[in-house]
Amino acid sequence: MNKLEISKSSNLKGNVRISGSKNAVLPIIAATILTKEICSIQDVPNLTDVNNMQDILINIGVKVNWKKDDKILEINALDIESTDMTYEDLAQKMRASILMLGPMLTREGHAKISLPGGCVIGSRPIDLHIKGLTALGAKINKKYGYIEAYADKLIGTKIYLDFPSVGATENIMMAAVKAEGKTIIENAAIEPEIVDLANFLLKMGANIKGAGTDTIVIRGVSDLHGVKYKIIPDRIEAGTFMIAAAITGGDITIENIILDHINPIIAKLEECNVKIDILDNKIRVKSDGEIKAADITTLPFPGFPTDMQAPFTALMSIAEGTSVIVETIFENRFMHVDELVKMGADAKVEGRSCIVVGVDKLTGANVSASDLRAGIALLLAALCAEGDTTINNISHIERGYEEVVEKFVAVGANIKKC
Ligand SMILES: CC(=O)N[C@H]1[C@@H](OP(=O)(O)OP(=O)(O)OC[C@H]2O[C@@H](n3ccc(=O)[nH]c3=O)[C@H](O)[C@@H]2O)O[C@H](CO)[C@@H](O)[C@@H]1O
Ligand SMILES: C=C(OP(=O)(O)O)C(=O)O
Image 1: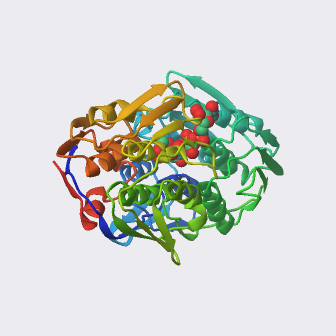
Image 2 (image 1 turned 120 degrees about the horizontal axis):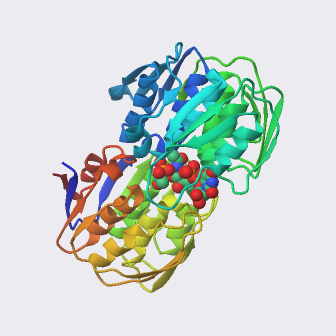
Image 3 (image 1 turned 135 degrees about the vertical axis):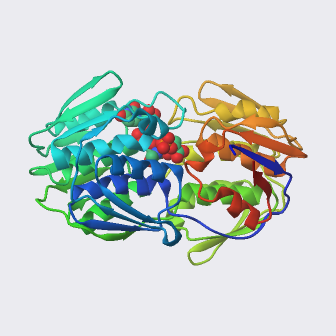
């Protein structure tokens, strides 16, 4: 059961509720080990990445109770039995495993973790994580495919990030919350998931100012306590359903969104002739199927998100005109393009750019998901392609989309897992 079969599905219609954000929940799960008290996280999406993160916690002796029907994850990190997180299979499956490093170092003064995997979209070094934690006083060795970090004591300092890395900002924040004195992160990432992590830590009793700006100031506190916290909605899943409406000439109302988080996607889709009505905490996305080509350049927030680049490329493949897609965040994030070409797209990658000449129609083919967003881009393309498409390796998609088949079926897609 690692394939999807999809046949042409015009005019998707109906309502879809967006799940809690994958990229927000993963660092927050890591942060729960900063307290010995129980944390209850709400609106937790049922994803393989969350499952893998749960397994990491269970392996180190943390008690986890995931009430999937209620979307609640209760974590009790009263006891940590091991600081060794070198299970290659888990770390290889997801990038976010590296986010255990900062909190484990804070909690136990030692952490050993396999080098992280995740989507194959570039080399994805972790030098900025290491630089930040080292500046706080950790001694870090990288060998035999794992990282080992020690710190008798973490001491606040000023850390300038050469690039506003989301993961490095999160790891440093989680290491600084109980460090002695003041930590300043300059050129910090400002993504909504950073703000969500900061809000979670603030509720636990941390002292953090400036999250959501490029300078975050953290004053170490001696103790953090258990909290109940609700995860923000997944802005990338929301963007995906916006494109589903656009690419099928459909009319989908997308519920549970935070408008500020999806503004860059709204602005771009409006440029492409997609009609968007903004309601309270929902939007209605309509298209008559006449999509105009537009260029995008992926950038850190509030620029166009790199995680929406592949889905947007799928949309551009049936747009009227030519679009230039520039990927500035990850150097190898065009693996979906060859697969879209198999489906009849006219697209060519040149370095960090992809030139897409819109075609009248795509045709179904046997294709393969190389990573999470490449996979969902193929799903979107398959919805508007003539005939039938089979997508292989859909475990990538399941890392980041909750109940993907059920949600698409609910708005009228002809899609099944097999
Ligand atoms: C689990 C999670 O939240 N994943 C998201 C997170 O990934 P992730 O946190 O891995 O992304 P980063 O923001 O760290 O990476 C951005 C860029 O910085 C580079 N870099 C990063 C760290 C480092 O130490 N050195 C370095 O050079 C990366 O190779 C990449 O080119 O943000 C990305 C950018 O919005 C998203 O695409 C991912 O969906
Ligand atoms: C790249 C992504 O995930 P990860 O960082 O977990 O590989 C993504 O969500 O698109």
